[in-house]
Amino acid sequence: MKMITAVIKPFKLDDVRETLAGIGVQGVTVTEVKGFGRQKGHTELYRGAEYVVDFLPKVKIEVALPESMVDGAVEAILNSARTGKIGDGKIFISDLQEVIRIRTGETGDEAI
Image (tube, rainbow, N blue to C red; front, side):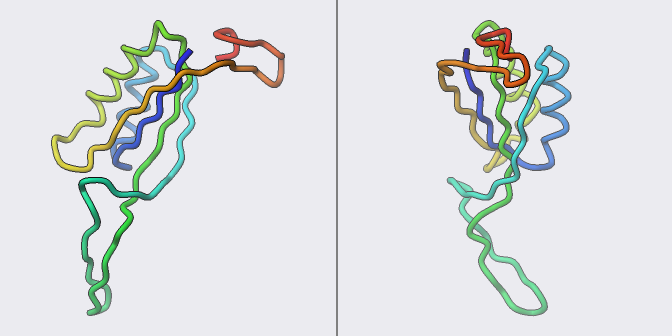
C-alpha cells in the first residue's frame, strides 16, 4: 500500500478530483495549506501599501492506494494538475505499513 501526497494549485483541485474518481479512486483527503518552493513569494498592493506574500496558498491531496493503482493515480495527478508554469506543485509517494478501517476493523487493502 502507498500514500500519495500531492501539493497543487488550488484552482486545479476539481480537475484532479474528477480525474482520480475516473480511474476508480474512492477516497481523497484535501487540506488547504500554504508554502513556497522555487516559486517563492511575491509582492501585492493593498490599499496603496505594498506587502510581501511569503507563503502561497496551495492544496494538499492525500490518497491511500493499493500498489497496483499508484502509477495510474500519479499519471492522473500529473496530467490534470499541470499548467506548465512554476508552482505547479509536487507529488510524494510513501509506503503505508498498515491501514485500519475504524468502523469495521478491516485492515490492509480492504480498509482502503
